[in-house]
Amino acid sequence: MSDVQMAWEARAIKPLGAARRRATGRRMSKSNLSLGAVWEETVAFLKAELSLVAPLSLLGFGLPMVALLLAVPADSAITGKLQPGPWMFWVIPCLFVSMLGSLAVSALVLTPNISVRESIAIAIRRIPAGLGLAAFYVGLQVALSIPLALADLAEGGAGPISTLVYLAGVAFMIWVFVRVMPIWAVVAERPQSSWASVTRAFALTRFCYVRLLALRFVMLLAVVVTLIVLLIPIGAVTRLVGALSGNQNIGFVLSFVCMGIIVAGMVGTWTVFVALLYRRLEADNSGT
Image (tube, rainbow, N blue to C red):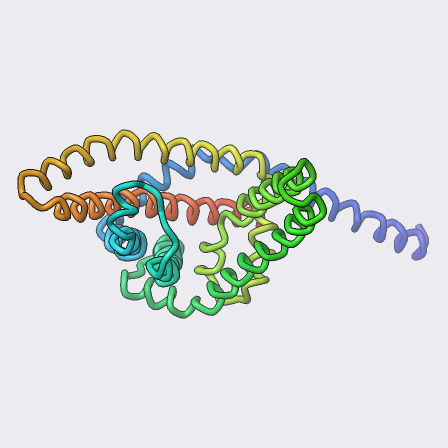
């Protein structure tokens, strides 16, 4: 065989091998992702590290929820109709603390033998990337509102075109949120720019969108059912406490605290699950 023939065969085999590796990676991404196995890992991790996850979840997710509920005017809390007002500025610090909570819990899961203090330190170092993601989200919302405003202007109000534009925007946002599901774990694991984190999350979820969309739906359904099951008896007990104490505000505060604990448990568990899901996606993507 001549040197020219050998060179041509080598050039032909190399792309074929790369294509096979890409196909293999695609099959691995589809077949190796077991959400049931990730859930089992989540339960095992929570059993082993509950003493570390619980304070981070209470501080990062429960406390902001209680603060936000306390900021809502009493008349709005009673009627259930929220009126715009200065209390809405509390949303900004509460979202900021929740972002730190997501980063800290993710760092706790992804970094071996780390303490609560060290996970918070990692979360603080990742603040610039987190703020960049917030800016990305706001910019995306503004960009999607432009065609909707133009459709409303063209139709002189809500019409079929603006409705289609709105539904398309909602579908697009759902697609984006599913594709960037592991974003806080991506940010927590290594220092990188916000855009690099977004592109990494998109790459990891490339071949499992349908499965992750179904996961989101099941998670939402589970949250709704859990809140209904828990909040009805809790509301009855807290109203009774308020009536017996002669001060209904005590019942309200007690219900807010219970709500914060429930939210901390659910969001903390979800954050641990997504961090372990990210680890599984990383392993499948690298072929390990």
